[in-house]
Length: 451
Ligand code: ARG
Image (cartoon, rainbow, N blue to C red; front, side, top):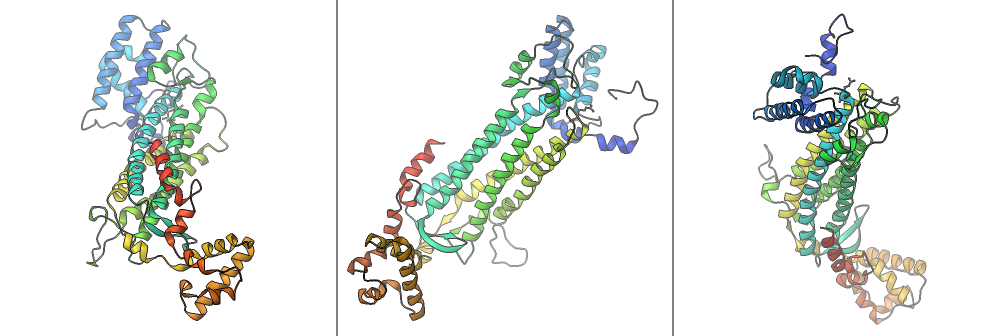
């Protein structure tokens, strides 16, 4: 069945037909397609286009088509798109009456309404999966709130922190991702139905009632915008891409931490993989795949932005390219989030290995701060501490073994109490301003409040 053809003398070429077909992916919208069609049928009845008996038959027919499309296994479909399939199947169910349903409506407003509907629930399901990961991260952070570990910048030892603080750094990024996903869901929640192909609907259909029945928060105010914009899908893909980048950073941390060189964590057997050749291997494939999936999540965003750029206003067929990137982002995140959750939830944390990785150079800044407390300006204290560490390196001595006399050769400000500097836990505890590792208890409380 074709939805058009009256003015053509030849059917479309097979190659063109194949290029234009979207049913293999837009059939995912079948449940939403039925819901939107039912809402529209009611609006048509409200507008006097269908009488009460016709509406009743139409709704019952749409329900039967919905059941057919939702069957397991799903029926094969060879139509151009899900809209064509539903029109055909509805005709099979209720005959000629089916041909009244498209009155005043276009696939342009129909496809957009159901896609928006789909994305609002898709974002909600992703938020749930993301919250399970956030919950797992927070629990592990809570357990390791006192576990000292080197903090790194440039992947070089920098200053001591606690492991829970590192885990919480990911928690907050994922918390913002949650907000972005929710915002994308809210943005999608607007109804194009009634926009027609681009010029609106000539029948007095109640657009607010359609939106209300579908649970969409608002009605789009301009019919050309309603069928032509994909900004809400771009926002969804942007939220997904940023989340993907954040997951990739978490995954990379786990890859590093689980290497023998770090040994900070050991991934559970259920979340590791073996090698077909090397019997000893326990590989972090899950983390690597999560890291790798960021590539396609970013690609999906770039794909749709590129499709939208420079398009003339209103509907252009290019816009049919909106769905696959969104489905792929959704599927990818649905795969990746539970793996991140399981990996984090089950990893063994090695307090001993983290402790063993601490070295005195992590306290060089503290040494400078000691001198600041004795009255030196920070820049001078920084230079002196640097000289002390260079000296220790040259002489192969441990900084805590330097006697105050030697230290006074670097600055007369050094005193007996310099010994107190060589304490990793005290260093962390002093960094107790809001957001610092010494303030992790209130940070944990704040994180809990977001769940
Ligand atoms: N499958 C199309 C899409 O998703 C539906 C709209 C087709 N409209 C048209 N005028 N050819 O964009």
